[in-house]
Structure formats: C-alpha cells, structure tokens
Image 1 (cartoon, rainbow, N blue to C red):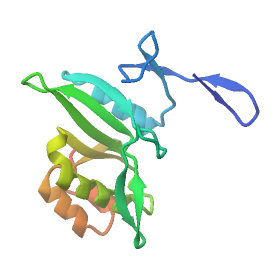
Image 2: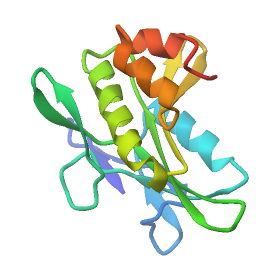
Image 3: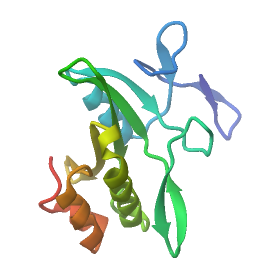
Image 4: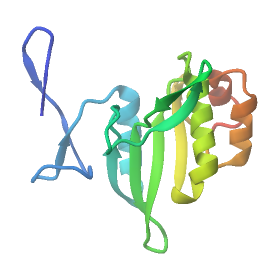
Length: 169
C-alpha cells in the first residue's frame, strides 16, 4: 500500500476498484504511468466491464508470460493487463490489453510475440490488443485480426504499424 522512495520517505499508493485481488474494501493499490492509467480508465468504462488484473512483471506462477524473438534468443513479454468482460450470452471473457511503447528497440519483436501468441490462443480471448500513444491519440492493433498479424510480420517498425492503416484510434 506504500512505496518507499530513495530518500527513505514513504508515499501511499493510489487505490483502484474492481481488481481481481483486492482488499476487504474492494481496493487494489497500484502505481501506473499515464498510458496504463488511460487504458485502465477507458476499459473500466465499457458497459460489459467486470474486473481487471494487473499482470505481474516478474516470473511468478500468477504472471502471464509470452515469448518473443530477441536477437536470436527468446525473451518474455508480460502484458500489462487482463480485463474481464461479460459477453452478450453472459459468459466471462478475458481480454489482453497491453499499453505498448512504439519507440523502444524491442517494440517490434514484442508485437511479433503477441501476434504469434494471438494466432495460437485467440480462441481463449475476446480481445488481444496492443495500445500505443501516437501524438494526442491512443491507437490499437487488434492482434486477433490475421491482417494485422501479417502486417506485424512484414513491418519495418512498431512506429510504422501504430501510425499506419492497421491501427485504430
């Protein structure tokens, strides 16, 4: 519930509703960057939203890890969020939503890993999306879409993808 700063002072973390692992008051403490907070806010506003899970960044049993090619080796991407929504038929749906920087050197390989994962496991998820901030917009790539996956495999960069016709506002 607190984060200790380098100076030794402690700062109380903000708390959020609807996380799968909450305290007795239904709250979950977390610290988000602006992209993550924007995604959480927008997803929680959806009519069929039920809950969310902050995927741990560490290799623990509770963390979803997706392999991606990294300079001849395999590395592991841990998508930021799994959102849960209710389908029209009342069934629970899982959605991988990953705020994804387009400017980092490993951005395209991580997108390739997500694309490969979506190709194998898309039936297990309602949505698998990568989100990036492009100027004043947030743009998404729908990784369940085979045309988007093929574009990722042929793209020169993640920036090209998020700024191009395969991304949606």
